[in-house]
Length: 435
Image (tube, rainbow, N blue to C red; front, side):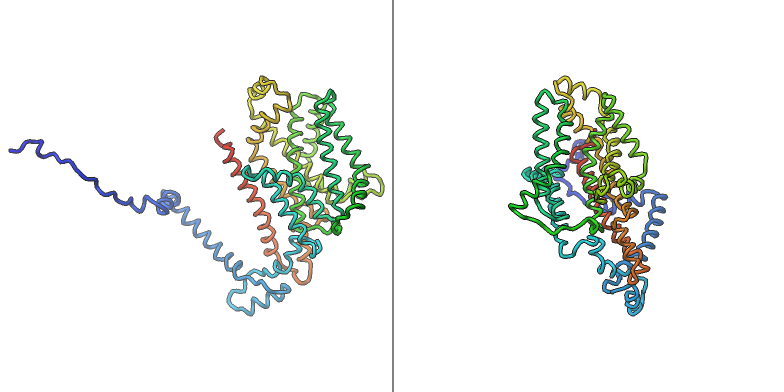
């Protein structure tokens, strides 16, 4: 009889590993867990796929088999009928023929390179602000790009924007000098008065004097020739860039313990926010001239940019105030314990955290502002919607709708989706979701 120990078996070599079941890896696992995890999920998935197939089976042939070469809608219809088969296809020929108007409005065709160069310049200028990996030397281009873009878009002598930039630099130096003196309390009013006086009495003479020595100029293009998506970009980008700092100041002013500053900020925010944007645009278009001296020619586009910026600033102030309110009192006490004054505390401790918390709200306001630029069509500016109406009013393209609106919607979607994706990238980089 053999002993129990003689029946023990110990494997001396490893069993070869087997591949996991197909239902537990790859796309099969994802489909099973996300689309067919239970009976209700499976029924909803099948119904959704059926609905998507029904929509795409109608939309895709209409889009992909469209006509791209035609001079009018009637010619487009004849081409579709001559092709036989499915005649319900898009007439993209209107985009092929009028894309330059939808993008540039009535800007002179020989000068299309100027807004394109301004857009490229702006992209390089804003890159060091958006991405930390970009070389910091580009900040010089960031500072000078508003003046260069203005010169490229509107033209005339370059010394006008140079003189304005010089005024800006003098204002910064003056503010720094006064802030270090005993008159630091008056640094902002004195700087503001200096900038206004320079703008009224020195800006033009300095520019003319410099232009007489070194004439550098481009042909002048008035604002009434601006239009299309370029107009939406100019209003939207300018409003976005200017509304953020103004909104920060308004948010700080609304939380200030100084009674007058607090009440002024509260009054401004409530008045601007409580009235629809279209009313402010009509105010800028019709009523503002009544309050200006007779004969004053205040550019309509500039008035619209100011109104859109102020409107967005009021919303931005409330978004940032939400971020400030989310911070604990300990943050203020900690900055005070380090001996920081108010502005140092805001710049180094409070605002970086408040802005980090407010990123989704800030980007949401930016996207809303950019889409609201289409409202300028009601005061006579030819944004993409206004130009689409003008195109459809012609005898050649009367009766065409979807192709124009799809093209315009695609342009806005690309810009808004890009802002949304950058917002998510910034949140991941700052890890705001873990706080």
